[in-house]
Image (cartoon, rainbow, N blue to C red; front, side, top):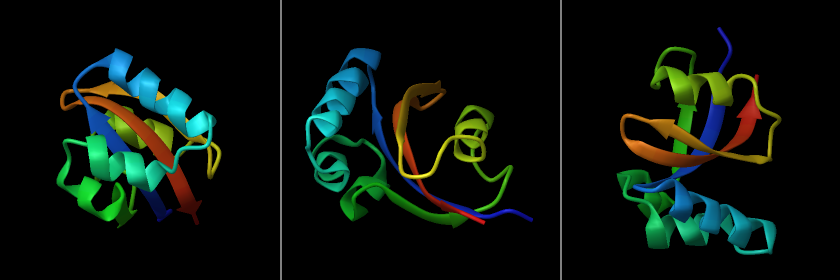
Length: 92
């Protein structure tokens, strides 16, 4: 079974997700923004979700994690929880 590691930032609006993505593209550190803005408890660890397999996350999140290029910020991705910026850090 494939495994991935990823980190994310969860916010309530698409506009905020886009602002944070722009900040990352302009050199802000993903982990710092996750700690400051993410509403997910993982934000305390810079958004790190650890390692997981297909089907362990909601479908919209899963699709991105198991198809997107590694080390590129994806999103905003809308789920029932809000809007995510997702960075796949490894996939095997």
